[in-house]
Image (cartoon, rainbow over all chains, first blue to last red; front, side):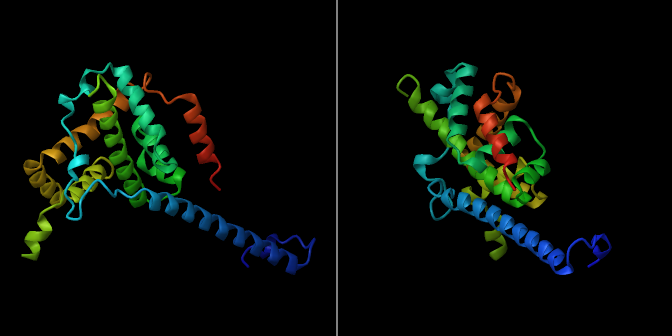
Length: 148
Length: 83
């Protein structure tokens, strides 16, 4: 009620209070919508499949030696193209985070503000994005050029 | 024994920390545990090197690596539409 002085008296106090309540409820729903949005993204994209139950790399997905792969023989522009293809396939939140962080070198705090997530959440999003991106680039590099 | 168990990182824990290290940094004790793991694990050494490579690729060659216009617009829209 500290802003009661701003109340112009053009409507009843009741209308004024209901107006405030309405916006509070809208805020609540907006906050909830955001939460669900990011939860659903997280839920669908666990880092499952990369590690076994003991936390060791799954042999199929363990990082291979890139220096032995056709990746190293690609032109820089071809490599960049493959990287972009991989970025395109990332889920939306991961794509945004990776592009802002890696491509544009945006400060972490700024990305948190834009995505409206905590620093811890952003670390998880970036971690998953990097797992996917690394793996995608490796797959593209080993299988996509000269028959691997 | 419990202390010993805590000091050994799994690859999964290492990978998570390796990504965090590129952002906010990690504690000294985690850094030591990572070093110990890295000495022993070729996959995790590759993982770190490859993440750096990807970051290098994206940042060093910024004009050539510039985001395609449609992707940029999509992302900008997505960020702006957030209530």
